[in-house]
Length: 501
Image 1: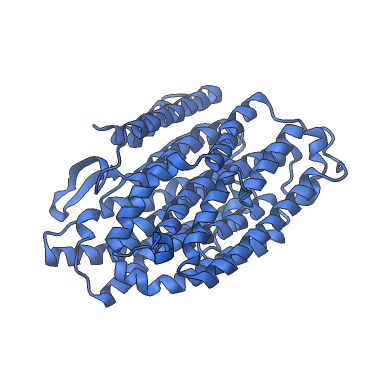
Image 2 (image 1 turned 90 degrees about the horizontal axis):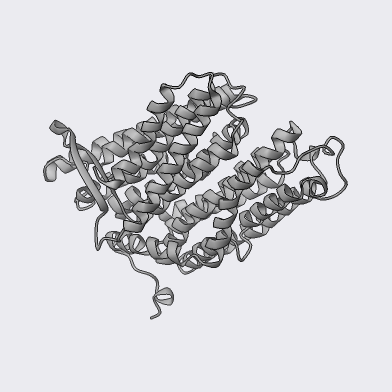
């Protein structure tokens, strides 16, 4: 068993260990869950150190027959795109466990169930980025819905049942469209060669333009729902508002990246002609997402809802970079996935601590927190600055690359997208002013500042925002070969102005 399989399956060992612990022993359950997630993170970094970007294809490849009659395999492998997203996943899970130490208590089910669901979800999140068999990807893509549904519906607040059900129905609808496309591409592969679900083999199929268009839409709509891209986004605000902060971090920080990851891995490489056909329309949807999400965020009165709408805007930037057909845009979009994961994690972590102390998520109930909780206020301020892409913080680099890459092909879209930066400054600074500054609101006088556990949880997130802001080169170095490979498979090159010609 190679190290990629070990990283993927190790959280399941933690699930087995948790199954043996009495559900009344909540402290031991949390320690085992935290220990499992930390070991998984360490293993992923060991894998990253051993990783060498292949000239083509994937590293750490493993393949075992699963359903031989249909050539379905347990096939894993990673490139730079998958590696950075797996690292994002394994870093955020222990932060979620440590930062939300008490958020699992008071749910519909036991603390034990909560952490078993978290660890199962971690295996699925790693597996979906590592899968090189399209059918295996689809199975994991759908299986992820189960733990998320129960995490929202069983441990959330407010209208959690309705939010969980809406999330499930939207995702299942997209999954059915993807399944039809998966079956379609398998049939085509069986007609041309031996039927295969291997993503590398499928990328060499000869598919007529009309068929490509239909198959592309089957995959793209499923990914647009997951992303979420306007107008497929309507499940997100309710889910983010109802879920616990930890669940929201994994939902917006990692799971939604499966959508944009899938666009690169499958839409661009398997259906390059269809991608070129639909790209202008997707660019329009992306610009609408950027502006729409930002405008809606400005008017929100609930902290969690505001963060959710900012994510819709940010995912608009990501899809803008993906479908701009430039290496700068594609690299920027990939880096944006990572940076958005950390930025969102910081906002939901600190926002969750604020809400748990104040017993309210209404922005108007906060005010003057910098007087009584200066450390927490500073952490929230830095997280907000990252969300508005302040130079020196990680989001700036990726946003700059996306807009630069987009401008050379779609200058109008890039110019309109730049308005999203202005709007981001508005919704972030308004939130900061209302919650952290001004007179101290009644009821906030006794709020406590961050404790040691919370400081340890937020420290690596803030460090990532700063380090990737000042020195993004290591991440870009890992991502660039994947970008080059994708551009080559699509048979596109940078415009002359970017290529330096």
